[in-house]
Structures are given as structure tokens and as C-alpha cells.
Image (cartoon, rainbow over the protein chains, first blue to last red):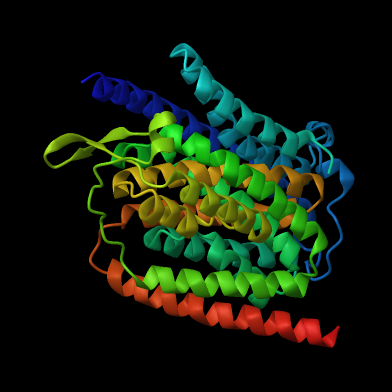
Amino acid sequence: MNNIKEELVNHRTEIVIGNLLRIGVITAASIVLFGGIIYLFRHGLVSADYKIFQRVPYDLCNVRGILKSAFSFHGRGFIQLGLLLLIATPIARVALSIFAFARKRDTLYIIVTSIVFVILIYSLFGRM
Amino acid sequence: MNILLFTILIWLGSIIAGFLGSLTGLGGGVVIVPLLTLVFKVDIRYAIGASLVSVIATSSGAAAAYVKEGFTNIRIGMFLEIATTVGALIGAFLVLRLATPMIAVIFGLVLLYSAYLSSHTRSENAVIDKSDSLAVRLRMEGVYPTLQGIKPYSVGSVPVGFSLMFVAGIVSGLLGIGSGAIKVLAMDRAMRLPFKVSTATSNFMIGVTAAASAGIYLNKGYIDPGLTMPVMLGVLFGSSLGARHLFSAETKKLRILFSIVILVLAIEMIYSGMKAGVVK
């Protein structure tokens, strides 16, 4: 059956994507850990306070600010960079799926997947 | 308490939460938020931000393992993602506007429901022989591995599944949890997919849904690096330990224990939310 063959090809693609995602998560976790060590060395003995909510400083809330902060070797900047990479892993998965559907010339699902992709990008870069 | 000690304690707590979450299939988020707010007195908005990030970590990190276990139906997943990501945006939008005691009460209610679900074991569906007409038009039917070899399956009600997924998205964006329980419910009960398909597809969807609200959380300053670092690293470590013990004998006892823990946390969350609401 043609269907079964197609599904097995899909399954192999999924295994490759799954492994790429795992590499992404491990990389992200390593960057977070590295930033965390710097952060604890510099601020470990300050008293912790998360009872009162004040927004995280603006520079740690957007892609450009986070990159700048990480390149100036700030622990918190590195942590945010790792978290940003982590948030990007499912987005990458969706992007890879668009390519997979495009290769099969599956117009309906190229559109469906692109809608999801646009929503994700809007969330990351849009202003609400 | 200084930051070093605080970080270590939260890291240890997150390992336990991730371990229990992956054993029971409910995910670490349902324990992390109550742990941070009730035990460590963290503002619920920081707690939700940290939890949501760890949800993405476990979903993406486990993708390879899930794919080996079952067949992800990418078409179904992608189509339903439209509902969950729009829901997640609305959920994140609501967090920005709702009073925190209100969020705590809603969290408690969702926990109660999760405790109920986790105390029940899922039973495999009888395979339905005719698909929903919309499912046929969207070419959602697929095949999955069984003991008798690879078999095709039909797909039940798409509109009901889609609506439930919209709710799952809102809950995920509002509370910073994966809401895997609702996702599996939509695919098991409404769309009548085989377990191997619904579980793998749900894991795939959890990460994408969480990413939709995580972007907004980040922009709005809800993701604090100092707090999220130990939570994310702990949950990731704990859940990979849990995945290894998935089929051990004690799992059933642990499930019951976990249900009780969740029940207690749920009541605490509702109580704390109501108290804070009254004081105001």
C-alpha cells in the first residue's frame, strides 16, 4: 500500500528531526548552565527575592538585547540566550515540516503549517 | 535566603517534579508552579514563565524517544496546532490582564481535573471503521505499528478535537503547563486515535503550543533568567530519569501517590488564591 510506504518515510524524517531537536535542547541547556555558573559566581550571595513581581529588565526581554547582553559576558544574558534557543526548537520543527510538505508538493499542508509558523513568529517578535 | 541556596533548592525540587511528571505523563509543569508559589513564595507570573520554558525543554528533548515508540501524525498535529497556538496567544494575553489570585484559583481547578485524570488509566479505543468526513478531506488517516504488523486507522470527529485543542491552548498559555491531559483527551476520546499515535502527536504539539506563549512571556518580562535556570535544568534532568523508569513495577503506586500530591496542591492553590483575593 502506498499509504504505508509514505508513512514509513515520514517516520524516518521524524526520527531525524527528533534527534536534531535533542541536540538543540542539549546545546540550549549547556548555554543556560554556563550562564548560570557565571551568574551564581557573581550574585550567589545576594539575597533572593521573587515575592514581588517586577518585570525582567527590558534588555533581557528581546532578541537583540539578549544577544548584546550575552556578548558582554553577562551570566543572565547567557541564560536568556540559552532559553531563546530552547524556545526556537519547536519553531524549527515547524519550519522543517514546511520543507517536508513542500518536497511532497502537499499544498494544503504547506498552508496549514505556514499559518502555525506565522503565529509562532508573531509571538516571538510581535508587539501585543 | 541567598541566591545560591535558593537556586540549589529549586533545582532539587524541579528534578523531583520532572521525574514524577514524566512517570505519570502529566508533565513537570503541574507540580512546578505550586512548588514555586506555595513553598518558595515566588510570584505566580515568574512561576508560570519558568514552568512554560521547562515544558518546551521536556517536549523537544523527548521527541526522539516518542518517535521511536509511536507514530506522530504530523498532519493531525499541524492542523490542530492552529487551534492550540491561537489558544496559547489568548491564554498569554489573559495572564497579562487577570489578577494573580484569579490565576491561582484557575490553576487549582485545572489541577483537580488533572488529579482525576491521572488516577484513571486510559483504555485503548476500539478501532472505528469510518472516518469523519472532514478528516478524510484533510487526509488525516494514517497507519501505526501493532503486534500484527502495520495497520491503518480511521479518525473521528475533527470539530470536537479542534475545539478541545483550542481550550488546551488557552490553558497552556494561561497557566504555563503543557496541558497534555486535555490534548490526549481530545485525540483519544474525540478523534479516537490509537494510543501510540495520540501520545506521540501530543508530545509534538505540547512544545509548539508552549513556544507560542513563551515568546509573549519573554517579551513581557515573565521569564526571569535566575529563576528559570534551575527550574529548566532540574525538570529536564528529572524527566529524563523518569523516562528510563517508565515501565517499572512501582509506577502504579507512584501514580496514586502523585494524584494525592496533586489533589493537595490543588486545594492549597485554590485556598491561597481565594485568601489573597479576599484580603485585597
